[in-house]
Image (cartoon, rainbow, N blue to C red):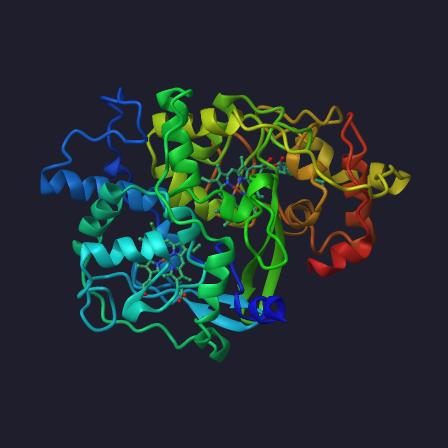
Amino acid sequence: MIRQALLGIVVLCACLHGADGQALDPSAHLTAAGKSVPAPVLPNTAADSMPGRVARGKYLAAAGDCVSCHTRHDGEAFAGGVGFETPLGTIYSPNLTPDNETGIGTWTAADLRRAMHEGIGRGGRRLFPAFPYTSFTKVSDQDVDAIYAYLRTLKAVRYRPPDNGILFTQRWAMALWNALFFEPGRFKPDSTQTTDWNTGAYLVQGLGHCGACHTPRNMLLAEIADRAFAGGTLTDAVAANKARLWFAVNLTAVHNGLASWSVDDLAKYLKTGYGQRAGAFGPMVDVIVNGTMQLTSDDARVMSVYLKSLPAQEGQNHLAVAEQTKLGGTIYKARCEKCHMSSGRGGFLTGPPLASSAIVQADDPTSLINIILYGQGTPNTLSSNTWETMQPYADALSDDEVAAVSNYVRASWKNRAPAVKSREVARQR
Ligand code: HEC
Ligand code: HEC
Ligand code: HEC
């Protein structure tokens, strides 16, 4: 009963990404000097001066990707109004600019800490975890205060986001949900690990909120702590009343995760959107363009150091394994081979490898189907210097054909994964 009430009300999630954010000014990068304290402290030499704190706050706001979720299409940065479609109706992100009436102009630094650390917003209302406070609770007081200082410097924008759907007035339920699933508390460094590892863990678990999408959730949509980073499903609003499913792959060292990636592969991917192993597409593009790309190379590296240290989290499926068909092979040869090669190893000037790819082998095939149907999907925001962007095949291939070529790549080059069915392709159209 309680479960149903909660399920009905608490529709997550930090992953209902519907945003169209703008990239922040890359000149805001801080230098990576002075990282010697064994604590999760980002490089900062001017914490006490106001300009230093504002610059740091801007950097941290990028690390938290606030702009992606708080900037509506064609709207002003941070003014809110992004609609997150859920089965319960739409929930809108609030205005974070310092306007007194519609934004957070009257907020104190303590108010922002309460929102980030406890999930309590204006007027004491309980926030929904569409706002990833379950991750942001780990961010230090000092860092939240720097974000506050930065947000104060934004131009005040008078804009009131639309009202939320009626079910979102049921905020009392969040008190229950929090009691069950939310553990407030700052990041605690692990003294047995290196400074790099700790800084990386702080960024990944806190502001980076990678687990909001990459960790599986339970029936009540809370992240399952002991399956951290084992891969999660999310929904992306593509148009009014239309959402598309995605799978945010397993980030641990398993065959359908990041086993084949080096620390450098991962760091380069986070810093540029491209690397030896993959190029970003779908909801990961905003995360990179507004988030990790704005970080220093050193911070992208330490995040990778931490992620590569995670224990392997095997999948739990026992589904039938994909088999190759003649149709799948024919399509691959005609449509895919020129970039991904017959060896599946891709090419420096053409595209990423499909052999040992996490996307190709994911138990949940939604992201694999999406890249085939829609291609890279976000022209102009990200482009590789060498590869030709992958084009959509939604019009060229039928559901059966997409399933056949998916199964072909899932069963080639030592890849192994469950079979994709054409009805699963149909669902992604
Ligand atoms: C994944 C999307 C997402 C990200 C990333 C995100 N927010 Fe939000 N935020 C939301 C949504 C949605 C709400 C509204 C939640 C609700 O109404 O219960 C919200 C609410 C808030 C509130 C409460 C405001 C109020 O009026 O009560 C604050 C403050 C806030 N966000 C600040 C931030 C900051 C600072 C960052 C970056 C460090 C950030 N958010 C990143 C989606 C996001
Ligand atoms: C809004 C949800 C979301 C968030 C937040 C997010 N990811 Fe992702 N991520 C995805 C999706 C969806 C994919 C699959 C599409 C793709 O590969 O581009 C993905 C793909 C990836 C891949 C590439 C896998 C491959 O083989 O192509 C890596 C690596 C990755 N994410 C790391 C991260 C890290 C590190 C963070 C935190 C800084 C993060 N992600 C935060 C949704 C998210
Ligand atoms: C013009 C070259 C080109 C062709 C043709 C092409 N791709 Fe791609 N593919 C790419 C590039 C480049 C990427 C990386 C994303 C991007 O930047 O577009 C990619 C990404 C992928 C990925 C994600 C891999 C990962 O681990 O992140 C898969 C899966 C994929 N392609 C499958 C296919 C299939 C199946 C076909 C044939 C139906 C195909 N591609 C045709 C260039 C191509």
